[in-house]
Image 1 (tube, helix red, strand yellow):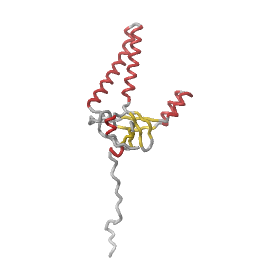
Image 2: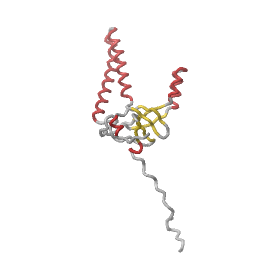
Image 3: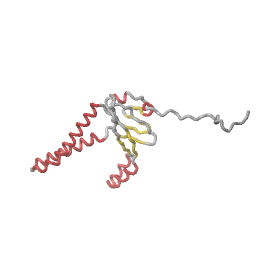
Image 4: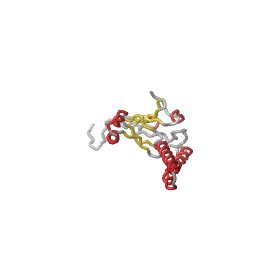
Length: 178
């Protein structure tokens, strides 16, 4: 047999494994949702498991060790600086159905309305107006905290993120692991 320099090599070809599907990258354990690094959430409402309305909004969740809260005893600015430096982040795209999207929109309008009220009331005069302005401002802060992020991180590392805040219907649709 002669050697043909133009013939392609006959070595075995390496094939890449199939990319992980959403079901491979997300699972539940109790009330917690786990997402593998690089995986995406299924395009379903994280509250009721209905089909999500596109486009899915990008959210970033942050996590740092609970031990860092001890730095608050030393100094609040030092805690803030260290927490921002050592925190771990994960970008997620949680889905919401039309009903929950509308509900979140109404809650956002309520928060903005309370904030506007808290800014206008002090100029109407009187001690009562100032008290109501403070109450409206506190209400606006509560609304901002409630709408801030639907999911909160319990732990993030290089391999996966552990989140909480999904509805039971969404979690029930995911495979369970220990």
